[in-house]
Image (cartoon, rainbow, N blue to C red; front, top):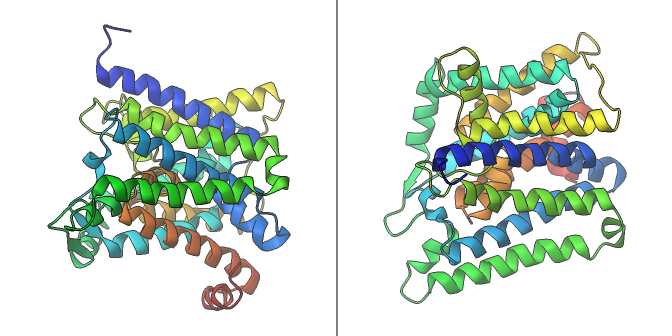
Length: 355
């Protein structure tokens, strides 16, 4: 292990971390969309509490490692705020994952369990993301970034860094105040519920997946491109590698490989491997549109429920907060769309009834 380069170590770590996430997500049915749907239709907060617990643990772990100098997350905090792309992209991603039945990570987990339907979803996400990055949609992407950009001349777009740039605030004091308030609040909110505490799957998945976020930052700290868990853009790199257009050796690509691998192992051990295909004529176009929205939205928002959600929030990124809010509302809008039977009717229902 001593002779391995930081890049190789990061790639191996990515494979292992991805496998842990995939295995845990399959075992516990960890899913942000499922959490929102459970609240709306069953008044069951356990899956959402699992996601919130993961966010709290990720934030606490990441800020602790950063404060001690083990990682340096300022490297991923931009000196500008892309408020429009992150808001619009989050909204598109959230609506898309409601159409496709889950986010990119959820689709990768299902691929590992034998879903051809989810494999199509992942491929469409990758193709749409590639077109948004460098294809015919790239000018729109660039225009949104130009119009919706606010340059921050005093500090990176971490909330604690911006406050710390003011003369009467100390960045470290603000960091820990925000970490205690946000992470502590999320963890307390989750653990105060006896039903959640008694659910081994939900409690365990929140803790395990939450710990994988700082583990990812740690694994990539000595590489040129520090990264945590993100499953939108890396799918493009994997597709390019599959067509021999790019080498698949980075951390992000290996996590995309690791997730279905981990899910496959658990599915095989529990005898839950099953071939899944599209159920009816409406299922195919609905999933294709949802996957395309996720590919587009995840690209312009610079992340997904993991990339901007769990990983981005762990850095106290303002962009991540905007994107996550957009994803959650887009998810709610998509669910209400199915209820109301129309785009605008679903939007009205989302505003009028919420959760």
